[in-house]
Each structure stands twice: as C-alpha cells, then as structure tokens.
Length: 286
Ligand code: GDP
Ligand code: MG
Image (cartoon, rainbow, N blue to C red; front, top):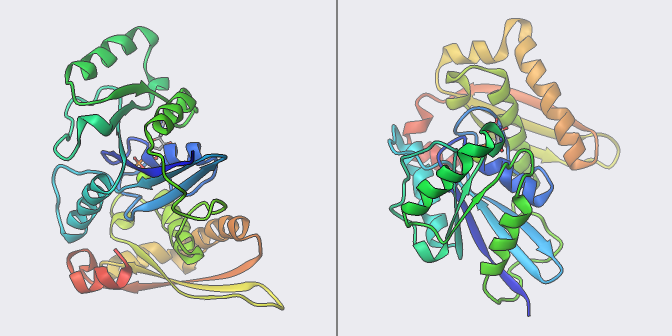
C-alpha cells in the first residue's frame, strides 16, 4: 500500500516556497534569499518515508508581468509543474489578496498561508475566512515554513491526498539533480546575498569543470556570466576582493555538501543581454 506522487510548490516570488521545501525535507535543497527570483529552475526534492514518496517541485515564482524571455520561461515552468503534479500547493503571504488562480483545479489544490509568525493570533481567523470564501481550495492551512509551525499538519494533508502508487525514484535519494547543479545554485545564492538588486538578476552561473581528484582537493571551475561590462568590475571588486568573498562563502558550503575539500575557481565573463537570447538560455540550461 505505497503512496507516491508529485506536489508542485507554487506562488509569487519570495512567499517562502524554497524555505518550505527545505523544512519538509529537513535538508537544504533549494536556495533561500530575501530577494525574489532566486529560484530559476524546477527543483525536485524527494521526501522518502516508510510507505510514502512525496516528490516536491519547487518552482520559480509565478509573476503577473513578464519582462523578458527568461521571465516567460520561468512562468512556463511553474505552469507545467502544476499540470504535471498530483497536488498543487499554492503559497501566499498573509495579506496577499490577488490570487493567480488560472491554472489550478479546486480538487487538488491546497492553500498554505505562510509567514503566520508575522501576524497576531486574532488576525488569523478572518484571514482563513477570506480565503475560504474564494472557494478555490480543497484545504487551507496556515503555516510558518521558517519556524516550522504547522508544517507537520500540512505534510499530513499532502500525504492523505497522494495516490496509491509505487515509488517513482530510488527511495534513498533526495534529489535528481547532479552535484554540479547544486554547486551552481550555491554560488548563485552567495551572489544574491552579497549584491544589490541589479547584479544578481543579471547573473548566471555555469560550472564548466568538476574534477574529482584522488590525491588532493577536487577542482571546480565556475563561470559567472554578467550582462554588461560594468557589472564585471562590480562583481570582481577592488583587487578582486568582492569575488574572493563570494568564493570563500560558496566554497565552505560546497565542501559541507560535497563532504570533501574543493578548490573553487570563479571566472567572470560578459554575455550581453543573455536574459533575452534563446540560444544562450538553452546553453545555460534554463
Ligand atoms: P521563494 O522565492 O518563494 O522560494 O521564497 P524563499 O523561500 O526564498 O523565502 C523568501 C524570504 O522569506 C526569505 O528571506 C525567507 O527567510 C523568508 N521566509 C520564508 N518563510 C518564512 C516564514 O515562515 N516566516 C518569515 N518571517 N519569513 C519567512
Ligand atoms: Mg525559491
């Protein structure tokens, strides 16, 4: 009597989708930063329990307005994740009134009101009432993904809705992405954390080489692509100080994840208007 299925995590940028996935999986699979659009890919996170396999798809945020080709691709990915999943988990922040509901089916959509640690108890009931009156959701569950409040009840509801099915993946894996994907995500996260709005948005990270070495540190070379020449200088900083700081932070986390010391080389290159060019987006794997 095994249960298995796909759950898409959907919602506006910054509502806490990646945080929830990490909380449910008890591991850091998805990057979390205070800035929107940290997540550009679909990230598969797999929760294996004795007779359940819950496969979470963390999606890039659903944006109402799409400014360029990368934005369009990201919304396309979120939409296809909803279509392909057994359960849609829509996340909102407490006072979000404008719900993007176009692609959801009431029968299999759970609404999670996240960040309830930020509101007072008496405000919660009317809020649930408001969303309930929209009649769009099968279940409404208030949670705090960051503090872990009510996440167990949410997981219980998810499991009860999963269909009977044998596992889709080996029951000992946490994700299907290769290690170099996580290395790219870690570097990108550090860039998001270290710079203002423009640089992270215009940056893409590609691991060009990942060499395991028996007799020393593993070697990783990653290219950080920027949109304009001026951004190159900002990223590198005076005497390379800024880039060094990113490299150090990223390396520590990569080593913890990889369980082995690594030599991380970061190279900054310019690819003009990469967010607008299909050919380059394909190359970068978006
Ligand atoms: P995503 O864009 O939807 O994947 O959002 P993230 O998971 O990257 O989170 C965006 C920001 O919201 C981060 O700064 C998180 O720490 C914060 N956050 C996530 N969940 C909660 C929560 O339950 N309470 C509070 N106060 N902050 C949260
Ligand atoms: Mg995210």
